[in-house]
Length: 295
Image (tube, rainbow, N blue to C red; front, side, top):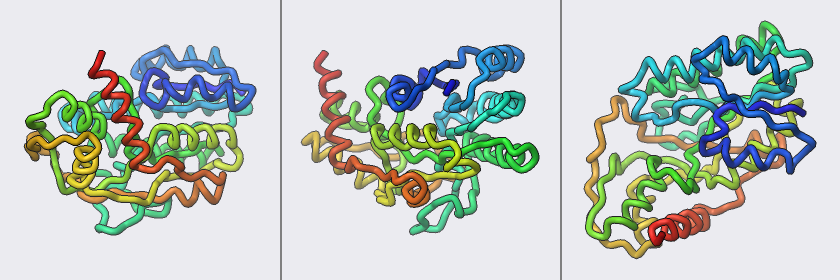
């Protein structure tokens, strides 16, 4: 199959691109045009005529979306709508695989295990744009029978070149600063998935378009942990005993204090479930960032 990947330079995309040819007879293409340049995107996609579009391209810094609402909406929503409309024109198109987010769930009662049946209440410009894309895909599926799969991604960790996101930020700060570090909210609950498990889920979904058509997957694992406790685990692994300055990040309107999800639908559909434990995944991530600090 000819597979077109957007966002191929990002965290998931850069890892996924080299894996797909190993899992099947695939030709991999990368979208080079800015998603906001609709004419350029249309020209490029028409030239490739992909069987599958894997749409990972997006601005993903949730906190920053509160300050760049228009930019996030233009890239994440309008850019995606353009791509969906172009995909409708492709003969024998097999699947539009869309990277959504757990953030679409917004405020949920504590104890909720989110899945495809949980009602979303997106509570950030980033999440609103992603949920809007989901609804547009559903519309295109109903009206034009466009094949699509939506993946509401859990917090993924295991980055090797970006310490903006929570896990890598905590680890890199502790390694660089033995005395004290600055973090945001301590009380929210999140669940975390290691990059290898995330990539296996994506690969299985891409390789099984018919089984995944018109499905919305969450990935799990169903193992929520409070950020305060998560930081303690990392500190113990690093033997870090410094001071933590909480609530030092900009205030986030409508902070979400509970997000957790199950991967049961994907397990039932394709037999996938996470394999890497939180402890093992953190050990691998810590080992990498320790080596980076030594260079």
